[in-house]
Length: 424
Image 1 (cartoon, one colour):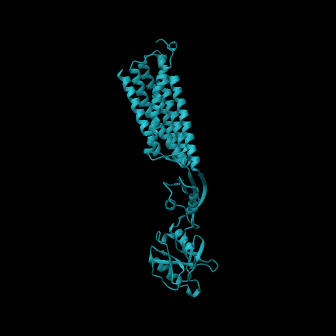
Image 2 (cartoon, helix red, strand yellow):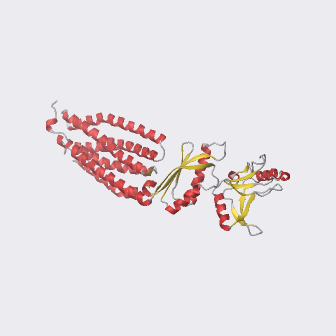
Image 3 (cartoon, helix red, strand yellow):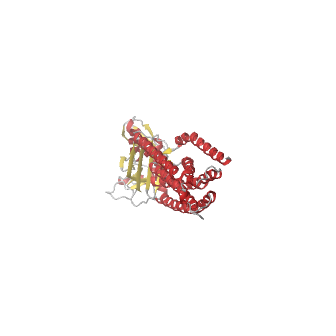
């Protein structure tokens, strides 16, 4: 009787803890954009200049620049990740449609500021030599000012005054040929081309033109975004409305609950007492898997929920294997406790083998896959590991308590008819 009380105490405490903490766990869960709405963009990077290459460092720098632009637009918890050798993926959830359109434009907005000259260029080549790039300018160093004629100019601060002095000195030497202009380009568009008459030993330069106040401020903001080290081309784009994402989440949870109810009923009808232990461990398994997701700060997506539900099937399968082995031992005429021990022992190897193969498949998906495939793999891997814990520890211990209580000794409680038992 004490063991039955221990069983009831474990069940009541476990269900109480799960019921009390589950709402908070759901609130803390990080939902992907397919569940709460948002958009996703996959960029392919190419070298900025002809003859260049996409390196790991330049790809990471570009990702950081994109993340900076996203943060400046007020997006909450953006995900900016590199994939492979030349791709960058951006995921942003909970963003209004008007903000989304503005951010899409900002992400690829030209901000590659260069100073170019005609040094060493053919007569018809124009400003072919790049003297200064965005890397030479101070971050957020552009500002709008007014000159003596009340014209708006954009002042830019340089990191190295000596480099600017050297460039202007060399360009000034071309005065006799009329090629002593230092053209200022934003991406491939020429903004101005002031003549350089002598060395300028300063860490500041100015962009002049017939700018309105609004145009000058927009140009300043564009420059301050920082130059992207690589060119980007959109390879894939997806947008999910907040309403659609919420509906997808509700439908998925409802389907999962219905499936779980049918599984519990199936276990209780066909496996009786082992099915009861399996059902309790299944509830504990689901809670542990959700808690593990939150502890790892993993993002829950639709593929992740699919792996979540698949994991429930894996956990149930492990319990079915154990229950069937116990039934087989009972049919062979063994006592209930002996059948439990033998069935648990013989089923363990099969369960471990099946779980190991699933773990290998999950690891392959994780290291080879990208995006949502990785999320599926992580959830599946967690499902398998927690399934082992719930089956080997929780389910078997609960079943052992009920067997040792002496209240469930009839073979019928384990799905075995008296007529099926073979004499030893």
